[in-house]
Image (cartoon, rainbow, N blue to C red; front, side, top):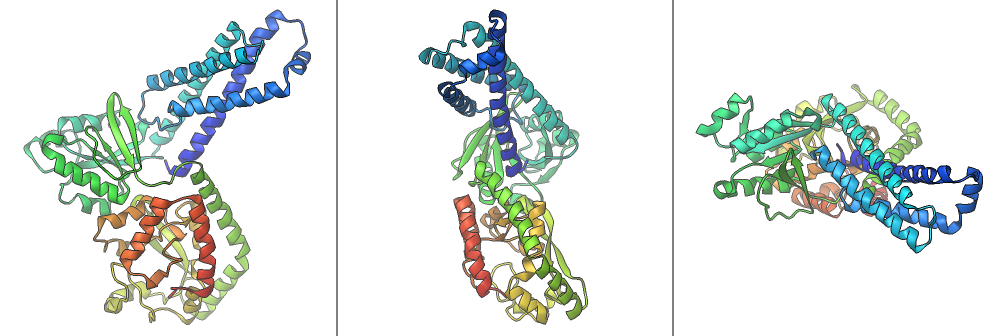
Amino acid sequence: MTTFRREILIKGLKLSDMAIMVLAFAIATTAVFYPFSTTPVEEFLAMRIKVQNFVLFMGLLLVWNIIFTMLGLYNSKRLSPLTGIVIDVMKASSLGTLIVFVTSRIFSVEIVTPLFLVVFWTASSGIIILNRIILRHMLGWVRLRGRNLRHMLIAGTNQRALDFARKFDAHPELGYSIVGFVDTDWNGNGGLREAGYKLVTDFNEFHTFLKDHVVDEVTIALPMNSHYQQASRIASICDEQGIVVRHLSDIFNLKLAHSDIEEIEGEPSISHRRGKMEGTQVIVKRVLDFSLSLFALILFSPLLLVTVLLIRLSSPGPVFFIQDRMGLNRRIFRLYKFRTMNPDAETKQAELENLNEMDGPVFKIKNDPRITPLGRILRKLSIDELPQFINVLKGDMSLVGPRPLPIRDYKGFNQDWHRRRFSVRPGITCLWQVNGRNNLPFDKWMELDMEYIDQWSLGLDLKILFQTIPSVIHGSGAT
């Protein structure tokens, strides 16, 4: 599940839990009121709904949310057993009910009787548990149909590693796909082949495998006493590239921002995530991406139509240049741009490699002979990149993020820390765009991408967007 979708799910859960608290309060009030009162319900509500009671109730809603958050009910529960979720809900609702009781004694709320508390606790616990069970089955149903999958690589081929993999295979509703195993080809690998699993790479070629395959998580199941160096190296490589690390034992001294403890059928594991893209700001970022991109496409629609006509009239070939690019966690997507070169530009690139003016794996020529006269104008004004708003609408890209690179450039990476730029969604503009673009050396470009990932905030995105406007107007660093 993407960070944006996860945040939407969490916010929805919080709202539903508060709604359930309101419903449970109403059920408990009804249970206490109706058997012992002859007062019409309208008069009852009119007597008791006062400003003080309303403020108290809103305060209880806030406390309810804080309690559920503190007890981890909004953490990822993909790998948690249902019994554990039920126990956590009962703990949270019990503490919430206790707060209701204490508040009622302090402010003399007469409706909160022992019967009220029993009904309130029973209703809130039962409905929330039912809500979690329904959500769990819905997510499992989605994963069984090949959606919201996590691609996992397991380091180690011992019995513990095999047992760990079998637990995921026995529960496809968890949404994990085992890519393969990492280890040396030793005598004990017979069990691996018998179980139908693949040894996809050894320790030395581990980083090479990551370059060419989609991997969301790596689980380390190596014995620490004999394979600490290999395990530490794997963890460090994943740390560099922004890949989630999960290990079954020991804790590595990594420079990571977050660690989460989860379990699969009693098997504890610890996952690490690097970066700051989480929380409510991620939802706001996606909402801004979608709304601003849609607005931009509508606003610039006359310019888009004129550009389409000019490209058609000025040179033969397609209007759009569509190319496979590296996206989030090395997922390939198709990037859209207005064509600014001759139709055979990609086939002629090999002939021009010796003229490359950029260091590192990227390819740039200031006076590229393949660019059409109209293309130079489109590039100077960054008009050629306007179709990328379509990529943002689709969710392949964001307005702000590291620039998506062609497959050819990615294959030229020789530093693992460079690949951490793929741990976030690529963008139309980023720090590189507003700090000189093609005038910067490749390593400085990568350092700016790492700075963006580590320092990300919604405020930084807005700052970059505002700085991009004058950069585009002046054509800074554009070729």
